[in-house]
Image 1: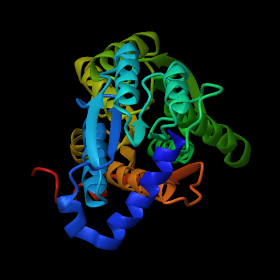
Image 2: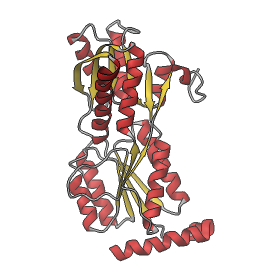
Image 3: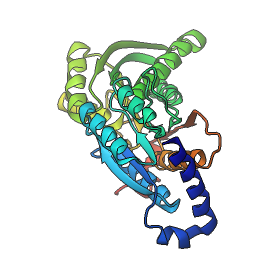
Image 4: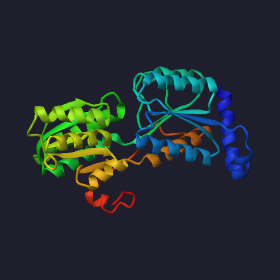
Amino acid sequence: MRTRILALAGVGALLVGYACTVRDTQPDKPVIAVSLLALTNPFFRDLGNAIKQEAERQGYRVVLTAGDMDIGKQKNQVADFVVQDVAAIVITPIDSKSIGTSIAEANRAGIPVFTADIKATAEGARVISHIATDNYQAGRMAARGLIEALGGRGKVGIIDHPEVESVIMRTRGFLDEIEEGRKQSGINIQIVSRLAAGGTKDRGFQVAQDMLQAHPDLDGIFAINDPSALGAVAAIESAGKAGRIRIISIDGLPEGRQAIKGGKIYADAIQHPDLIGKKTVEAIQAYMSGEEVPAEILIPTDLYRQEDALKDPTLRQ
């Protein structure tokens, strides 16, 4: 199997040398197989589309699937990729630890594995490179945004999703920034609630309702992604507290940016799924060509406020 991968490196070099003419006449293109978290989330749709577009430009064929938040389904997808003897596998793990057995299976078959957006944390599972948002930096940026929104004082709840490594890093960055702010700047932000919502809008709504009932004097919410934040928006509006509780998120989905434009979410630490997808394929191509590939490629976020949304040409009026 290892010989096959080295041969593919030669194929990659030939593809570059002969450019489009060879790509168009190549009947047996090497396959990059992808298993995403879910395609119902626009972030992962954009990520998948970016991988597909860049991979096809590089001379690969792409098999694009999604586990749809079901780790068993994702494991079956990876097992199928191994049987199909694909050139490389890209995974956004649904469960950062449980996916380890599937990665180990691909390792034994000699198929290189790359993770995008969400890191695998299982011991003994070898990943060539992890390409993702700098989630720790994003969490710190979100905390700075909420400190700004609250003027450095207030009671805050966290809508969490601790099953995935990327969210663990976001929450850690958020909490570290708050703690440093207390020590260095004297801010008075109190974390009064931290509840898991699975990263979905429906659960975000339910969790935010619970927070509001337990803490009627809540001032702010940090939601780990836009679906959770949009659920919190609905709960706040249902409770008749619109405009009284500030929400900060990490994502940059169109619906989230629209809510920022309307003043329903204060700001997002905005991600760049198109760049993550492109960098993932570039890492695969570099590995196939025999180059050294960094174990981790992190892409920073930018804080996106209402003033940015009002100038955003992709949003509806």
